[in-house]
Image (cartoon, rainbow over all chains, first blue to last red; front, side, top):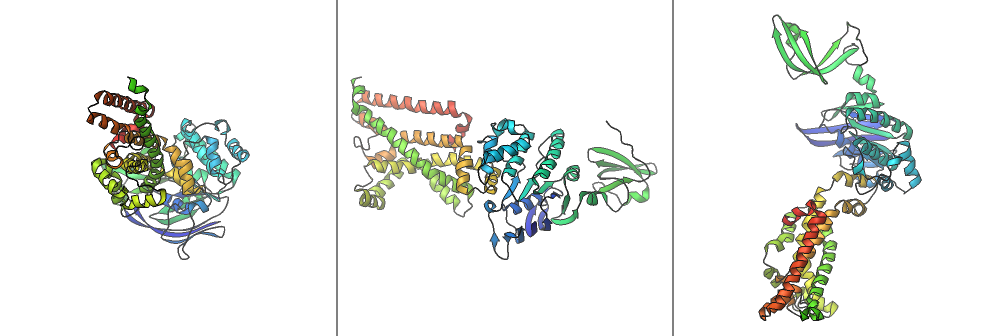
Length: 289
Length: 231
């Protein structure tokens, strides 16, 4: 189990953020660290890996202290046994796919490396250099390479953000499958709700540098204050008065919708605020496109 | 043309190539750690160190040569030290030329390497660290193979620059046959002796040689190398 209780002052886009997170991660669980950009999600992963140092607190893995500000312990990244999948994949361009895996292994073992490539459907690419691969293939190689490290915890920093929607969706399935095969404690940074929902066993939702919520994705994303079954979060783009009613234009993900509200309701609304749009009265119709 | 058959005619060229080769080799050994340190370490006096390394770009070679001469003679601190160990002073000796050339050509090695190190993808370095690889292993297996073109640029330019060196060599090396008389000095000699045909022979060969090196650089390394001349 990975136990974290750390704090650090971060320089965010809106000023200094007091980053403070306490959480335990069990082996075999797929965790997503969710939240807006610039609130320290990536920094959290980097602190776990030892690439950045928290100001205070402790990080413990299966009883082994990786970081403890009181005891002045700070293990180097070399000693922590973490697999890190970087946003740009950080493949070694001078090495073939197989060599990338061999370099990552604690003890060089070609059979083992080829097994991992086999499981992930990459064996045919083993002699290729990274710059001859597609984005999706590079992502899979990066994942395979971090598994070859035999890490105690796998850290994924928005591993799918650079890919197109189709590849992304396919790789989400693969990522889940890979996680289930290798049974690692995995922590993934993401700000895509559907991705979080699809992949994670547990979600750590950060807001303004603090833990906002943690738990199963269903509990977190579906049990809002309203009991409605049909609810979206959106941003108010425009409020317009038409005769005696008001029309509020709301952007929800890639859709823009208009909602009619009365004079009483409009008082609480203003352009730019984030709102929930929900309905209870209708049964939604789902059609296959 | 009979002089072309005389081995004594070719001796300065042999010496020039030997000097450039040894200088370049040592520049790799010195330049890689310096450039690595400058690229990846934060420290207070980096501007001072960078300025010192870049000095040979702006100083007249005679200034450097003069100070080298003082330091390299048997009364100078380096020259005395050298004499204790190797039995000869550094001034007017091939060893002195090598040391002078290393310092004189240092920016030509360090600057391309430094820009190579700085352009390196930091995440690849961090990835190697999370794989348990030490900084040295990472340098050897990940960083240096990624900056091959910078290594080639630094090497070729340092080599060519040493071939073209004159002022420093004249100041510290003098003009001793087979010891310090490199090609550029030989030309100066022949001109002083009003022996223009010999001066022509040396000059033309050096001209063709330098052109060939640079041409090779542009053909082989293309755009990678061009910026480095202005580094």
